[in-house]
Image 1 (cartoon, helix red, strand yellow):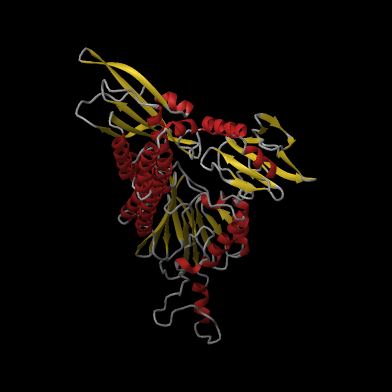
Image 2 (image 1 turned 45 degrees about the vertical axis):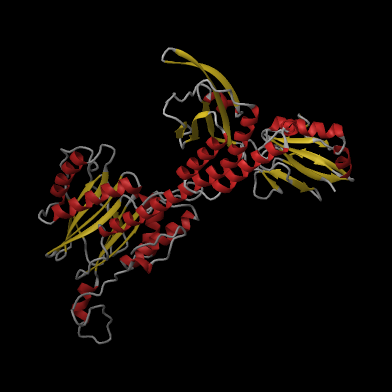
Length: 579
């Protein structure tokens, strides 16, 4: 039987039987997966050819070595060491097992383990040979006790307290124990400091960078001055490594004038660091999961709050149909729309705050509230935007601006008056099939507080439809970065403009097909408004029992198509399309 046996590291001693081709790398389809920097997806492979074993580099970035020498393809001999990055495997077969049992070969293997300093080899062989049975048992008991204690700790602070308690429990010369951990910015900072007595000798970080750079334990005996008197002090620094990743450093400082730390103590603290590394990694992961859960809960609350600023349903207006959809790229977004109903009038606003996520959502909430409030007592869209713009520039950060439309529709005459603050121009799909873009527009809200916004008017005739949208529609991209664009939007409008609800659904369907599985990158908002053609036809067909009408028999109002949030299909990312 032929095997590859791991030398040093977290997987020291693990064997992999070679029965056919065996691929090593960091890819998910490899027989031996190594998730470490410097390892290619398919790094190298070991094969059997004519009863001989070969190792072949698979054009990896950092190459493959056998016995320290780079190889492209090489026949393996007993006890050859294959090196991939910092990971080593010893090639063994039936004959190599017999050879390795000889005294000379055993000495070589011990030398390899000593040089590796693997996390499974807590004590070097020569140190074990010098220890009495009682010493060895005591030291192993300390390590086993720590392993049992820290394995139950998921809280980082609790874990570090237990760790320092155990270290101070076996070292009677230590005055200060410091655990230094790497933060999310890559900085190594003290996370827990414990003094044994009240004499606060400062924490010395003069050798910390040396340990971080070399990832190796050190003992340094120094002399310090306290109140003008010189005192000897010993420092012991041990790296905390998890799968070859330096997570931190444990540093001990002795009491003044005490004996120096020994190699034996360095070995024990190194063993403790090896054990605690997994616990620290687990505690960090646990903290990150809890943080993500809290963030998720906050986002869910923010989403519910934001939806309260948007219409819960489209209004029922005699002679008109309205349909809308709102799809944030994240759980909350910067797009907004709203309706403000008055006697014989309806104001419709739609806009897009710069940015995404919670910051944009907060600005959106402020902006849509101001527009709705000011529109209740001001009939001029241009003047409403003028007032809102001055408030927006004064109270919001310079980092934010917003594009927006505000339309006032006279529901009796169909006359539309609107102001445009740097937004996409409204589209009109005429009853005859023509598609128009209504010109007019000024700079975005928040850009200049003194801007006066011009007003533009047009008439929405019977059977006409207005289409309002944000740039999340036209700038939606597929996997090849091709945009949906105006071509896609106008194509969807020409396909199905039978009603606002069907038109919104057609636009979303075409966008989804064009995106072809690519993630949504920006918020999407659409509002469609049509003036009902049947308003004219009702007069001629009211007395005709064969004619179809959508007039509500009880109220006489047109039964418009109010589409609930769930009417449209769910997107792949789980968000729902509101209509």
